Length: 265
Ligand SMILES: NC(=O)c1ccc[n+]([C@@H]2O[C@H](COP(=O)([O-])OP(=O)(O)OC[C@H]3O[C@@H](n4cnc5c(N)ncnc54)[C@H](O)[C@@H]3O)[C@@H](O)[C@H]2O)c1
Image (cartoon, rainbow, N blue to C red; front, side):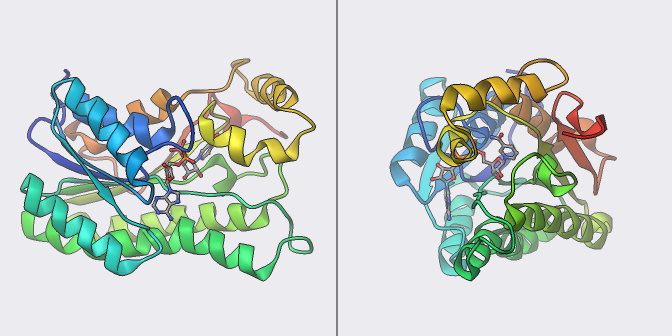
């Protein structure tokens, strides 16, 4: 244990994983616990939230599992209140939930656009609405919002709602960062690049002829020659949530092996 988050409480929305292995949210929840935090693992899939909480408990950490759909304000509010009730306070808000829907403006439906904006952006408005008053009262808080390299770049896929939603996450985060800076609260975005997580085998394969083609193409596209892992995102999240990042506020941190610096994808 590094203890960087000793005695802190973190709430992770989207703390489960859509498949076997390590998703970004699951790894981040476990990494917060390894750094000493007590963690509320929230997911609309209660079994997935429970699986992450069980890993934390199995390592000797303290975690609770809660079910909530981030598109529902009442459920987000209930999960936030239960976290404070069960774990005593709230220091870190981690917004991991995000989905993709294929299609540019012509192909994508109005419903898919609305769904992506609701799950990826309105959710963060809801979680911040519920967490900020608690953090203000405590005089301290760190918010980590998971955007994407797609928030600042074309990433090779035609998913226009995803580009728009992830860009919105970045500037929403900047706004919160500035509005609350003088009250001891920091807000930063993480921009994962091409990560090898269960998520891509469900939501990105659709852009390729086969899973193998997807994996090889994504490794090749990365400047390092390989995709990143959920732990790369989790390590960045622990840093941004900790006092090591006490003077880092309103930034968007790419975790992408340098892909953002490359011309053309
Ligand atoms: N994997 C990549 O290459 C990559 C790249 C850039 C950004 N990202 C971002 O990372 C995040 C996803 O990471 P992950 O690996 O944990 O993904 P994941 O798909 O495994 O999702 C984590 C959890 O979110 C939950 N979830 C989905 N919709 C929900 C809702 N409405 N309410 C509550 N929970 C919900 C799922 O049940 C799942 O357990 C997203 O924001 C995504 O945009 C991923």
